Length: 120
Image (cartoon, rainbow, N blue to C red; front, side, top):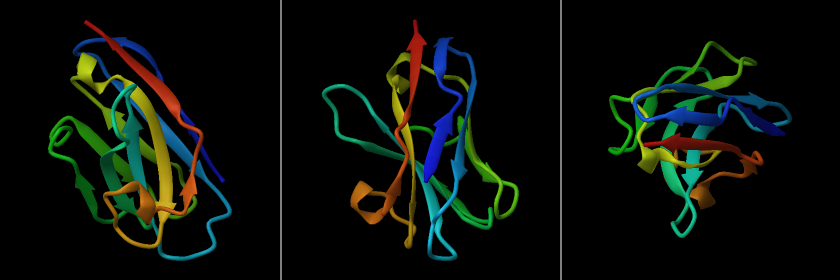
């Protein structure tokens, strides 16, 4: 089970920190990814991290602004989002999978998502 939290409404240039609490993933190690889905668009890869917290990858659209982290097994996976822009507005989902994937089909476990809205 994956449960996201931390979404909300923020002005452009502001910051938010999302968290993903993880339980029940049956394989190890695994990868935890963040995706986002805006109305009228495909679900988009944001970042992933190894379940141990070592090693991460970002999409070009968030590189340098977002940081994904996990302080060891059992801890939540966090997504620190800085310098937010209106185009970052979306529902954000965390997911767990066996491979370091950048497409949704590579992840087997999904949360319900948390809404992030950035006003201009």
